[in-house]
Amino acid sequence: MATSTVSKPPRTGKAGSTVFLKTLMAVTGVIFVLFVLAHMYGNLFKLFDGHQAFNEYSEHLRTIGEPMLPRHGLLTILEVVLGISLVLHVYSAAQLWKRAKAARPQRYVAKKSVAQSFSSKWMRWGGLFLLLFVIWHILQFTNPKINVGDGGNGPAIKDDPYMLVVHSFQVWWLTLIYVLAMLALGMHLHHGIWSAAQTLGFTPTARARKIAKTTATVVALVVAVGFVIPPLAILFGGIK
Image (cartoon, rainbow, N blue to C red; front, side, top):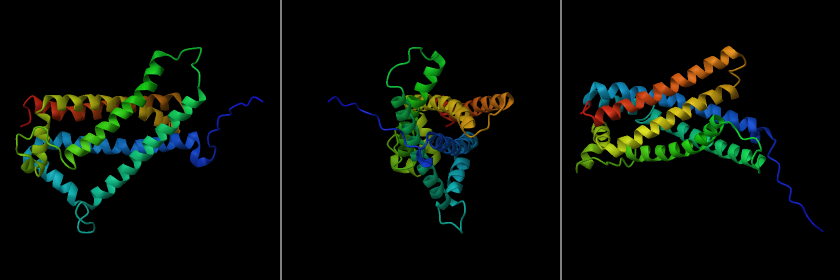
């Protein structure tokens, strides 16, 4: 007797629902937006203030909360929060993608619009590219502090945040990778902020939707441009 294969239905419990996963993505996305804005602000203004100012800023980040917290205490808390948020964000994205794919085992007869198709594919592959970039960024500037352009002075530069940044972005191909990553981040933020606003219920009216779209555009541009200015300034000799 012939048997038929029945696909397993998606979980319908609160913690496994599509709405929950979208909300989880939105909330963790907000955490990342706040972080990249603060990170961009510090890099942009302190690097142009010079060697001493940037290193004092870097040291200050490690001593915030003392003596109530140990050295690097607040940064450790932030790193844990960001790490957990990253895992949850990636997990939610993967689960939502799997469910969307399972719900559409065959291609639509009517094709999606070019813009919709590009946006969907970009969030998936652009997000993967950003994940790989984040891993590289941590290895380069946090631990073990990989120096691509150290000029043979690796140990000394690793202990000098300003020189680590300057020597890194004097390498043209590394700067190019960074610029491409920031462009990807801008596009990811533009789509992600708009999607998060919808998921969290911030777009009930036409005016609210317009504000959300404008906010998404402004934040994406500010973050992307703010992050690419310092490495380009270093590459072309504006910061030495």
